[in-house]
Length: 220
Image (cartoon, rainbow, N blue to C red; front, side, top):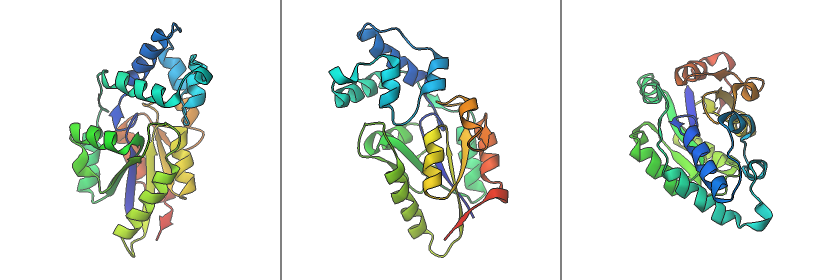
């Protein structure tokens, strides 16, 4: 049985432009040059601190927690929307009887509010974020989520598939020995993703790849 774990920001939620705009607001406040959409897609990665340095932030002179709060405040002011076809894909997976959960590096309370505000909460068995705004890793959250999924489906053999838009999503999938499907329409340029895992340019594409059992890895 296929079971999909979706990423949120940059995958189901089309917010790369919002993230870029928030960063440029912050850079402007510091008298720094703005970064381009291409620079963002070519360089953004988790953990995010090295990327911030590349953008021009002088992290040794600032408090990282304050920067994280400032970013999320600026980000909240930007328009966002669900990715094209995201709700239709979630509905199609539900109709096919495919289990679905959500994993994000976003702090749990913010993630739950976001998912509810875009009308997507009802599609997920579990919605798991982190306990911080650090923008580092979601590996620990992923391990806990996988344990919850296994506990909820005792005795089932699940083809666990992680769908995301970042190199870190492949790293998470590898930790759990799960399949990974990547989405080139989010935070990372396709050229960075396609050498690592099957990569689609639309949410429909990645769903089709996710439900292809040809490369499934079964977990008990």
